[in-house]
Image (cartoon, rainbow, N blue to C red; front, side):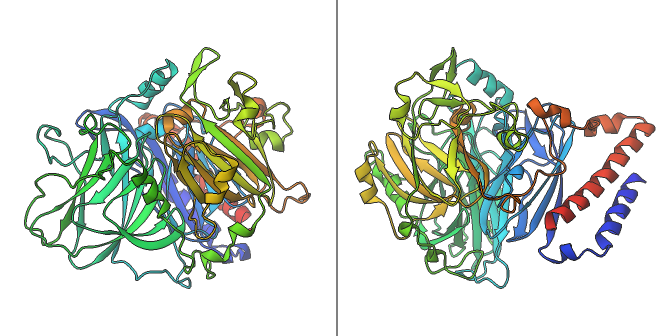
Length: 602
């Protein structure tokens, strides 16, 4: 009865006259985030699913749509969902990281509302706190072009999302404990493709009884395949046996179209390829994701293998896997491949004007930060990771909320712009953030002095990847920058003993997370926030107001209204009167969704 009532209320409000809703469409999603049991590598374990599925559903929307995701936290610990690469224009309140949002308590629900404004491309979402991504909770995001905007290739015959990532048979809580005790996570137990273990291509390396992913295709067609590395910390080389992969897009930018037989996809990165099924169908083909920048002889079992199956296939795939890149004695091969990913200057994106109409090389840099990372070290008696000697400690009061409510001493603005500026004092735990200049143009150099591969992400923005090289970055390194067609993206790799430089236009107000996408480094403190405030905006026109459903914690917990926890298991076992309480909450949630949508649209 209460389900019917909730639907009736929602339908009635949506049917009412509302001129503010006449613009961009809305897409509504209801997610129950809970633990489910799975055995992707043959060992039963607790993973994080969405609506009972692992991985979660693909969010398929179109640019400028408004997205409303009602999340019920059915875990036994707090939860936040972040949207990797979605820029949340003027709306960092929906970013889903601890610097901007209070986590959703166990048993509570919270509704994300944001617009994929002027964006297209391939992205993904995941839980951002407490190493939860190592247990799942992730899924793909597809943002399509509007029909009136041309796409720089013929319409594909199908759209396929592939999630790759390293995987541990230990739960994320056990992995957290290891890091808290000062240990390394060690070699993963395998690599998953769409939440499934490897096809049994080798009886000695792959045990029997493991479910693998099969990608069904028809001969003579072209498919757009979107690949996301959602893993913990391992760079992966992706390849499809016997097939070329025509790279066309990465994280919201169309690229120059060039064929690859394989491509390194680093943690947190997304690419999309066009793959034509033009091969002989005498047997299935291997789809492989294997570890990179590691001792491959030790990591042979850490390989993900799926199957590409033509509808007229003559039999199962067999024989050895296609070889990975042969660069054991050439450390520049992968970097040169990364440099080959360029912006398509003749293509439009979410707007009809060409991407290349933004002349980034003609803009004066107003701020420059060199962020140096080194191997984790002991700080204050605990093993921590740092940037420029500062290891970030998540705040009890989110930074943006602290600003809105004038909470004192929530953070400092003394983050050093060079590691040399921090060398005079020992490494420390801090909440120091970067004070970005609104409408300024910032240069960020990531210097990786660790022995491991790293990748870095910036929320709220796409940046131009203008340079990378081995050794220490110097002022003269700017002479090597690509000033013409550097690709714009939100996650970039930084090779061991090397640097990567990016340029970013600070036109999006808010507090934005800059982090290592390697979960262990991030968990140990390798992150910082960039504060971008329009000091002349007295009417708050360049940023959304605090959402009406904001969660409050830390020093602002007194503003939080209580919400009756409604775990699905508790609701299922409750007596009839308790069910009516849950029903009233759902009706209220429906009204809140619509009211929030109206407010957002206006």
